[in-house]
Image 1 (tube, rainbow, N blue to C red):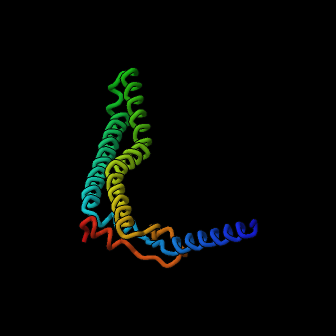
Image 2 (image 1 turned 180 degrees about the horizontal axis):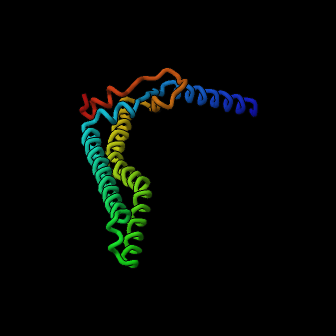
Image 3 (image 1 turned 120 degrees about the horizontal axis):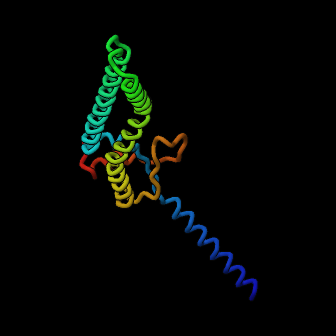
Length: 171
């Protein structure tokens, strides 16, 4: 009796393992290039234009600060500086030095401001793209969707970019 129970248990285990292998073999694998998808979205084009405008504004602000620094520095180094009292010269030098420090830190500050603006504008677009990929994967029975850029070697898979573009209404 114990042998029969053991044999039945082994046979059931093999059947379940076989079903598990069949289920895994039926899983579809897809891949997509988000680097191709996101720039093709109309929202991205608007965000990219806004980012370019923002970058131009940051550059203009830097130019204005630099111009102000050169103007104040030239006043200190001109012949007219003899007209100032010692206290006035000291205040003007302090002001010029503060402007110089501000200019030197501006590059890093502007880069941080740009990255923050970029995240603010691009994050919702990335979320929309990922949500669309997930919806297409679910609708079409894909168990796995990998990013094309991360693959060096992969099992046979399907590019789902056309399906996601269709879902998003992107041409």
